[in-house]
Image (cartoon, rainbow, N blue to C red):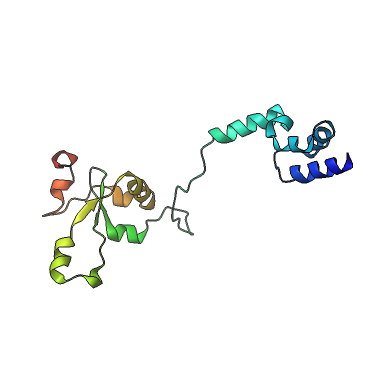
Length: 154
């Protein structure tokens, strides 16, 4: 019995959910392998906590940069340089290419803009402040036809 109890305590030591008191009482009445089943030794409160943990959303990082002086949100400078937000909420960027390998004629052909899909758009919204999300009206804006989603052909 002492060997069974020692082995049962050694197996159950790695479980963080099971309390030490329930381990000792369950080892005396059940074999050593029974400690591995979590349902045999859990109290109703522990079961509720386990179910609650599945329902709670995992923490995610909402902000990327915050100023140290006032604690305000800051924009990521590389996002502002590389991406442009249209009035309809879409983000566009230049096509990613390795310029050092390409000939000038091919570089000119590859200089086109592509739309970002939903995943990077959510991330870009978090990485910029409301200053970059407002409408900017420019004279002779080359992106004027893309600001409204009505004219886009997919």
